[in-house]
Structures are given as structure tokens and as C-alpha cells.
Length: 298
Image 1 (cartoon, rainbow, N blue to C red):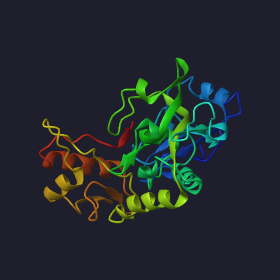
Image 2: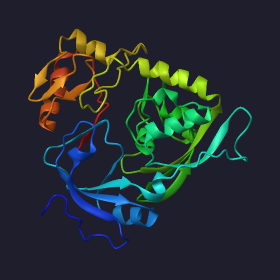
Image 3: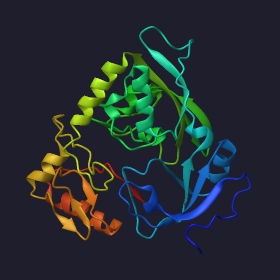
């Protein structure tokens, strides 16, 4: 079968194609899967009738070279709509609550819109090439802030149905929303602080400057969460990997970045197997339990 063929699999009109997932990930590795690109809830419920995974911006993700047997769901249409109007019933002079913003909205573009409006709270996520739903699902962030800083409520769809929850109802933590793996963040209301475009830009610039030392090659982002010792002290994963002498280590065309040791980069033509070998090398050489920040498929 041609890898770009549109498959006649959907009764609701969803676009269904068999494609290499390397096209959709920031790392640029991954074999083929059946990809469902959806415009609305009817198509979503159809797509969820068989085993599936949800694909956002493709960052933070390493897909196996052999591909996937499950369907892969991508959100478009109504799931990519943005309503940043203040909800008068939920907003105050000190806190603005928006209308619904779709889980398929790209985070970088959303941050640019918030900056122009002078809305603060999400500047700490600048530079993360994710979609909003994926960023919320993993509570993506930097040392300047995280996705849950700007959440008022979120809609989650699962095989059991649709529900709306607040962050207080979720067991969220550092780089973890507590949302189960087969649940999809379809839309979000943002909780923002009125500011000015200039002040928001200053905060975004400060976070962006801190990223200048990160690698420019294709990468999923940070490989490991910063580990926490029993004392509560949090260590820098990149510093630990660097101290283990692993910067620049290479397997095939995957390399631990010389610029920042917590990044694995694709030098061109890397495989998922190359990346897995480097992850195993790091875990064998660093004397602290290292939890992955990457999602591994399957």
C-alpha cells in the first residue's frame, strides 16, 4: 500500500491515512501508523472505537521504528478553535478566564496571541513546540513555569464519556497532569492575569534567553525529568549526565547534545533504536534513578 494512501475507513468522514510518524515528530523518527485527522466530536468518538493513541505537536515523543498497530488521532477542526474572549461570569479585575481553546491549537501561536493581548501566566512555556492539549496532558514547562499555571478548567474525553474538570480535581505534579493515558484533552479554559504586551514580552524573552544553549538539531526536548532526592532536593538531569562524561556520546546518528546533556538529537537518519540505546547508556552511567520525560511509542 502506498504510504500516503487515504483509507476508506471512516463512516463520519474523518481523514484516514497510513503515513510514517517520523513526519509528525520533532525528533523525526518513527514507522508507519493509521492516522486519523479529526474535525469534531462525532469523528473523535468513531476513532476511539478501536485502540488508539493521541498525537499532539509530536514533541517529547520517540516512536518505534516498526510503527504502531493502534490508530493515531490528530485533532483539527473544532478542536483547533481559539476563543480568548473573557468570560464575564468567571473573570474578575485580577483574573481573566477565557472561552474554550481547542486541544489541537499550537502552543507557540497561542502564546503570541496572548502576548499581543497582554495576558500573562503562560510565558514559562515559551519555546515548547507542542499543541495545547498535549502540553496540558504532560504539564509541559520550563524552569520559568508550566502549563498548569494558566489552567482554569479542561474538557477530557475518554471511552467512558466526556467530563469537565478543574486542576484541583486532578493529581497533577511536576511534568505530570495525572490524566490517564487514553484520555484526550479536547479543550481548555485559560486562567490569565491582565498585564501589558510589553511586560509579557519581557517575561517571554527572559525564558527564551535561557534556551539559547539548547541544541538546534531535531530533538524531542529534555530526555529525563529532573530527579528529586529523598531530602526533597531536585537535581538537574543535564548536569548529572554531563558529570557522567556523556555529552557528545553517539549511537548511530543519535547523539547526546554537546550543548545540553539532557537533549538527544537526530543528526540525520537516526533511528528510534539509536535513541533507546543512548537512554539506556545514560541510565547505566548516572547514579540516580532517572525518570523519562519522553513518551515512548509503543
